[in-house]
View 1 (cartoon, rainbow, N blue to C red):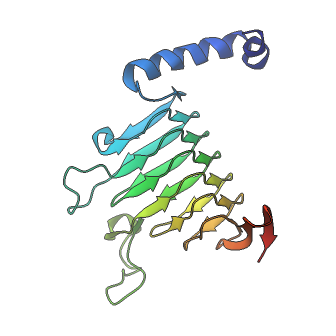
View 2 (tube, one colour; view 1 turned 180 degrees about the vertical axis):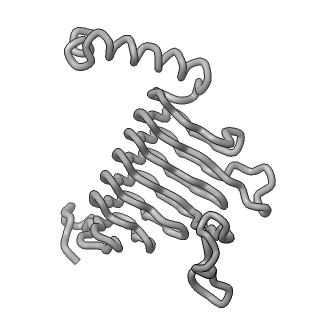
Length: 200
């Protein structure tokens, strides 16, 4: 308890206690939800067990016509999400077990407009009025996502991977990889024979 006093101070401890009570009442399977917390279409979101989030998180879904009543945004167990994370689901966003997400991360399976293929959006149409496109996002178990990362539609981040700060993940990342940059590219992979992260 003394360590908590030193870490948070009196007002910080009161705030944490208030958040604990809020979590227990409204999200009993979660570990701790720090307020303010914005969740939209809650019935289509599964926060999993022991979910933890920082302040100012926005978690929302906008189901398309093909999604009837199934969960669109699904978290595994022991997911930790830090401050000001924004996650959007339209078709399907799956976040595995023991995933750690740093602050100010954006994850979305959808986009305003279609920019590939035969039927593309016109720049003459205001962005907010363009047809929404969507492709599932999957973040597998034990992934660590650094600050200011964007994860875009149609992407899978493989098990045990690390995404470096300020990266833009616009294509899938294989398991046990470290990826950085915009667009993110793999710079290291874990070698289980040597137990080392090795450059590729």
